[in-house]
Image 1 (cartoon, one colour):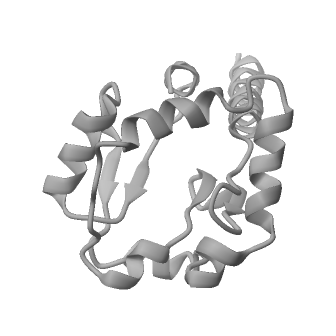
Image 2 (cartoon, helix red, strand yellow; image 1 turned 180 degrees about the vertical axis):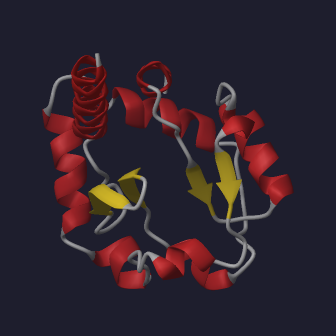
Length: 157
């Protein structure tokens, strides 16, 4: 998160739930400055507009789930993040506002104005985007913008 802030990229996280549950989640997971960028979508409006995957099959029975976990288990420090997250969830219990939201899969998107730079739809539980790739794309995009601004400034002199 700090790296994105340093680049000048605004981080926005959307979660199902109510504002109160969002505050509880931030506190429970000890997310630094979480209230600055965590928004909630109790009606599922954004999930629906983005056509994110959802359903029992995607949540529990997709072949991509074991492959996602296999990837974590076989790469260096692959389980570090998972272990950290799971250690915090052992005392968490959140019921979504709508019953079917329990089967929502997430996604990762990188926008530059109206331009979609990156879109990843989580295929199933555990099948998340490569966050390092997203940060590289954001850095490349910001570097390209800086070069364009610098070129325009030089041209104007």
